[in-house]
Image (cartoon, rainbow, N blue to C red; front, top):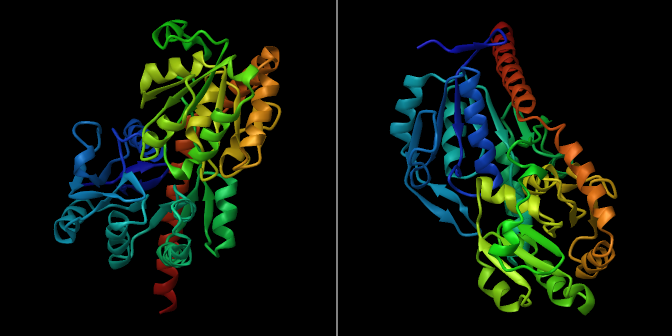
Length: 395
């Protein structure tokens, strides 16, 4: 079985992840797009993920395993792969490179195989689980988390990070060989042209402005600040807005109970339905401070929707303050309330921010981002081969 040649380098890829479509999160969506791009570039790859989330959603060969939800983040699965069967399959597939997108059991499977057979392997860091531990009042585990992450990343050829903020975080922990792997956006799917007035009728909205949140409804997204913002808007502003909350998660029951009457909860939306919701809203409100990137923020910008977000994490790489949106101090409901109050009576300002956000989003091509990633794959393979030859020559 011969490896595909990309840019002069033989390449056959094995990808390890604990989350994939149809799960609703940025990691799953990004890896699905990556798999499709590898297919377009004729790069053979084998995908290792959890059996409960496959069912015809991929075009690449899949090896699925038994799994359970991770307690902090049920969308991320803790897998229990069979090392014997996985090693046999990998020996038949003969990967040139392993891309490990999880630090959990599935990632450990890939890491151990790479070390056993001295193969090039790259890691991608997707989630600040240390900040999740903080959100769930488990701070005492944070030093153990970083000790494990540093061990897990110690041998890889490259660690890919989605934002400059994430790169800085890992650098301060002593993790080396970091490269930026940013994210793109489908500006055909997410577009101002998807604005749909029927949404107002469907959800019985009469207020002039729709304020939108999209994402998991859980502590690490700082739902507490969002709820406080919804509760404490001045009465005159409250009368002019309607909140739409798109998503699901463990904090949903409490949020429903505490939310004001002018709030609608839709659950998760996908595809054209989600695109229409973005394009039909007037302001995207996103308080999360744990994002390594912030895919939903970029989706909002591509839809021409101005963004009001916490000035933290990967969102700082996307939103240009006072140009494509507004960034405020994380965890401060008063700051969100102040900005909403200012924007509620400034429709021209909102439109201008939305137009600028759309322009910035149009610069983020998935094709360009993935082709750069493939070039980084090539470099990792070549670098590992050079190191191997040097060891042989000096032995």
